[in-house]
Length: 104
Image (cartoon, rainbow, N blue to C red; front, side):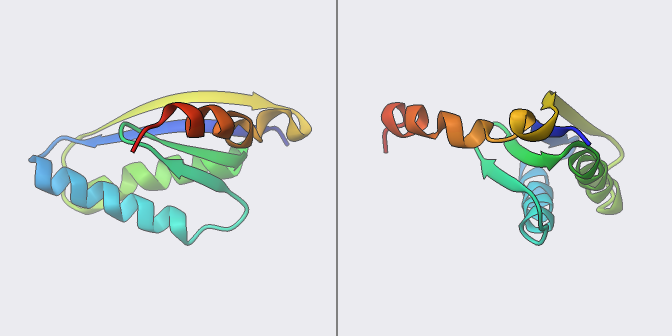
């Protein structure tokens, strides 16, 4: 099964306060997952793991918005995949650059 690094941005079509609440619910869902790694950024969340598993989490993230009463959810994805470890480890490989360039 291919491994993947998936950049996910969920934008619930609602007021800003409610949109942030829904993003927090999605992050709570990810926090409870095993066999993935993820990093939360200001514009998206990058999730790494088995491609099918990560895409099922994307589906759940979208469903969370609808379950919370939002009529439409915009999902922006970027997907990098590869066999074996090739599709994962992206987060580890870019961490030194992130540490160097991200200022407090």
